[in-house]
Structure formats: C-alpha cells, structure tokens
Image 1: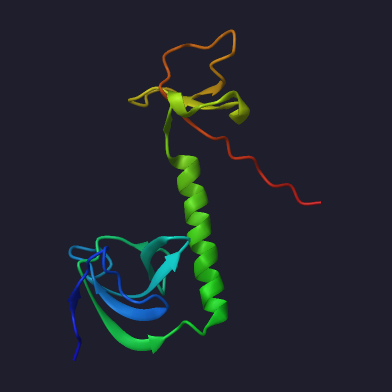
Image 2: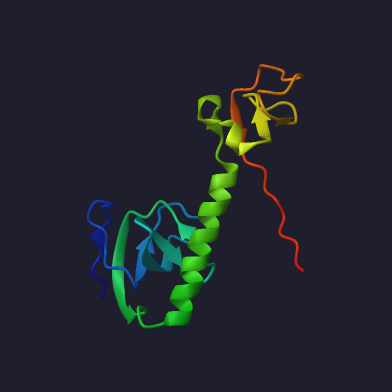
Length: 144
C-alpha cells in the first residue's frame, strides 16, 4: 500500500511531489499530506491543507501526485516559505556583537525576558548597558 521510508535530511525526497508523512504525537493527527519543497537551498515538508511547514517528520511515503507542473501552487508555496523566513528573521534574537550602526534603531532584549525591550542603539546616551540581544524593527508598508 505505502512504501514508507525513514526521513534523512541528508538524503531528502524529490521536491515537487506529494507525500504522506508520519509525525509522532502530532495533535492534528500523525499522518499529514504534504509536499516536499526545496527553496533557496532549504528543504522542508509543507502541509497542503494548512500552508505551513511540517516539523518532526520521521517517515514519508510518496502518494504519486506530481505537483511540479502546478505553477500556481508552487508560487504560493514559495511565497509562504519566503514569508516564514522573513518572520523568523524578525523574531530571531541576535547577539550584541552582530549589531552595527548601519542597522540603526532596533529592539534590545535582556534575557530572560521580563521587561519590554529597549528601542534604540548602544550609541544612545541613555543606553542601559544590560541588553545582550536584539531584533530588527518591523516597518509597516504604507500603500499609496
């Protein structure tokens, strides 16, 4: 019925095909229909129904649907993966050593997080000198 294979990230399955994957303990069910995607050098299983990355895959089996010619679906997956990277970039704390004045004002965090972040730069006269990590500030896009 299904040809189950153990998932090894070093030997990923073919991109652009649909797979049934097994994720032990997943709250929405242990078997999920996904596509395997290789985008910008990063690979992942992508849930067909929710449009989100599926993590914790231990086994997979091809279900025989080739989606590589589905341009619209592929574009949506690429957009979703790109957006996920942008969100991860905004949410991932970076050490103070990675900051440079070209970044300008950013949000500064003191771990463990118990207070709101400081907004500014280490060059500010009121720099509190206790923050160790920073995240970029998301600037809203204004139409028109």
